[in-house]
Length: 485
Ligand code: NAD
Image 1 (cartoon, rainbow, N blue to C red):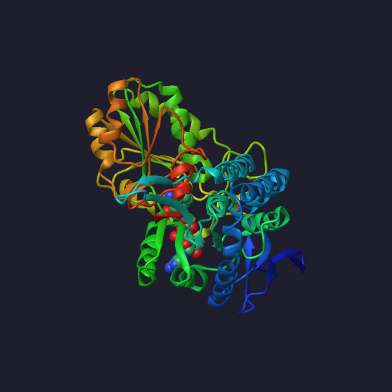
Image 2 (cartoon, rainbow, N blue to C red):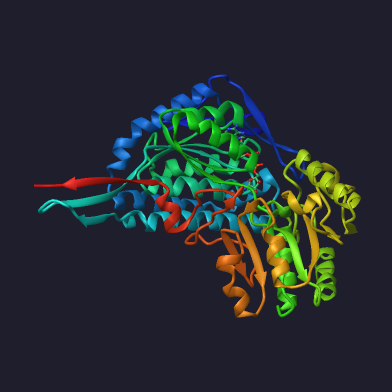
């Protein structure tokens, strides 16, 4: 990093060195709350991807031959540095994508937790020994790294998504080339400086910033990249899967969601309303696990609607760095406009706009992309907003008549990532395994994954999954050895 005018400037990180991109281009990063220019970041090209993959390939033999303890030690140092600089990183996350500082602090701590989990588990990549079919033969099934991993991430958790990909990939002995999102690459770049300080060897971690076309596509198509792990939209995920076909590489895709949030008549309604609002408005609704459709039993609908109305009206929208702020801006103008168009369409299709439904104006709002926390009622099956991911601060209330009705409507969706159920009835909870078609279910709580869980979506929400022992296993492949004397 060097200084150009008043904002920091970031180059690419390839083979342990900060280098200028081949095309020499840069893009400016703006704070979505203030409009302020906060950094200039290198625009990578296909040639930079080539150089980064070469560096990662060259670094692979030595890194993969390190002992599990040696890799863990480096990761523990990396985690400690993230914690040392937590406050600085939280400010960066907040400034580059607009989430309130208190949420950005949680993101930093989650990122550290992901690195800790990876470090703790380097020694647990255990294989099998199976009796062979010949006298004395043993069949060994060993877990070995893939080689060079290509990673592509989204803007909504710029640091956590970086840690979620880098830590398990390195723990398992792979090397990596990562492309952060072009809108919010700064926390990842600063974390890379900490990775350097932690002693991650040259070439093991490479960062090529830039957009999907110039950096993402060449990374996906590169024949020496053996696995692509991507977090982002379903549309991009499908393109990546198609582009990966020519080099037949493995793809892990963490894509969009449309989480149903079911509140039954026997639920703790106050607790459910609080969780529904938190799961909808945290990060201005820009989370793949966000409560995108709130299904409420008709017997408690009015009471629930009153509670969420009060809670939504009490939300403080403002400067993300202010401790009182509950919600910051949308990440960009196109994202704000997309959400607003969805709300307008829902109203035209018969939804009732109870709160919000507009861009906020006046004072600090005029500098950023602030959208009012919004409540739509009278929402029904078949409306576009019930089908498409909003990814914004818009709560939809939908009345349901019984649990079967709730399950049917919840499952009637192309996505299958997260879901929520509030009930005290064990019989209903017991039906979740077979009857609710989502990879992740939160029962009687708001959203938010744990590093030791498994975050994965069915159907259009993705392929693969991340976190925990199953997420770590993605970064190894099996090798079978028929062992004879
Ligand atoms: P996006 O699809 O616009 O971008 C994701 C990444 O893909 C970016 O880095 C982008 O530059 C890159 N990209 C774009 N086109 C590409 C191409 N053709 N080839 C290779 N790379 C390409 O998504 P976004 O707007 O950053 O993220 C929002 C979406 O991410 C939402 O749908 C959200 O639900 C989803 N998301 C999912 C998870 C999860 O864990 N399932 C987590 C966070 C966000």
